[in-house]
Image 1 (cartoon, rainbow, N blue to C red):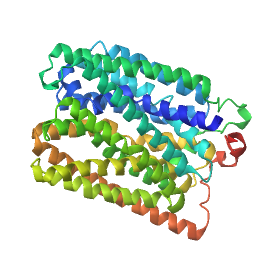
Image 2 (cartoon, helix red, strand yellow; image 1 turned 90 degrees about the vertical axis):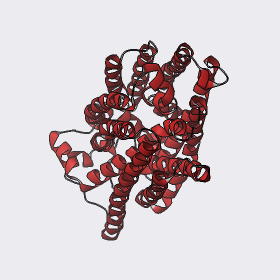
Image 3 (cartoon, one colour; image 1 turned 45 degrees about the vertical axis):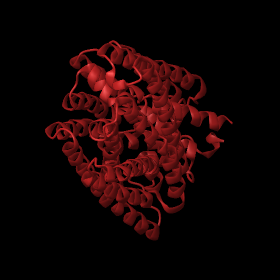
Image 4 (cartoon, helix red, strand yellow; image 1 turned 60 degrees about the vertical axis):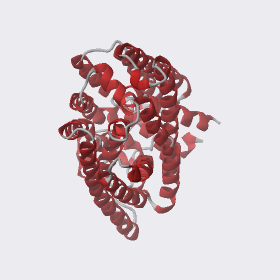
Length: 439
């Protein structure tokens, strides 16, 4: 029962920490753009500030996760992030929003990200990494969809029955209600994390890994680190691509902002199925093989969307591919950190490795939104969105190439035997959080 509770808290924490910076823009993008009077380009530049702050936080956050309590790191991050949401509800200016997103880049990453991945890896053990990460991401998807529909109900409460007739005052009040919902929930889950998660990492200095500059350099020299970072980079571009589905529904499919938010939220319900299924398959057939398959699906799905027009004979195909692409993206998110076990990453430097991989793999936080904002603004309407999907298809093709290389290398390593350690002093240290600790 204790393990179930811990995973439930990890799921809630893992999704709600990103709800304010990302859910508000993913599910309610047309409303956000109207309320703050942003263009796609200006919003993309604000996200770039988040990405830059996050990139600087990934690596030191990984070191921190190998030293401090999971409970302390996750609980503090959630409360600090929720506090920022109350400020966003005042509808700050563009410059102030950029500073807020820079703040969130620190609160959501520095004390949180690597600690969450480390806790999940310890929860799964050596034989159930795919299941652990699949349950985590699948559960996060269910939480995201549930809160999105609650947020939609809050927004709809303030808007007239025909949302296209909403005034600026009504739209602003509704969006402020959404922000307050996410802020209160994020802070509340931070309190839950403090009381219900274990204080792993609070061990004597003799059992803590010795993290040296040489170890860090050696980590960077491992080819598997760069390959895994490349996979995450391409997969994360696909995930970020889902953020524009609600805008696509309004500008191309002709939906109002409430129906567009519902479509985006419905696509999120695919996430639990995709992530858990991918995790179970990864434990059976290797994560790298499942990742290769899902990138192939994305190439085809985004390619179709890049050719589709909003004519009635295309509508069913467009909607099907929205859900297919969401399935593939969420499946990728469910298993790409399971590669830590497949590539034989030492358990007691999980945080450091996650910091290194994330530092590279999540750089789309910096460049993706500015690039796609400019793609959409350069050719408003359907042409811009078709160019956008073509860009996503190319990125997915690159991900397929990298994943295929990792799968081939894994098969070769299995024939040759276990991968040798890379001369890290931590490899011979006691492993933090072994099977007995997780019983």
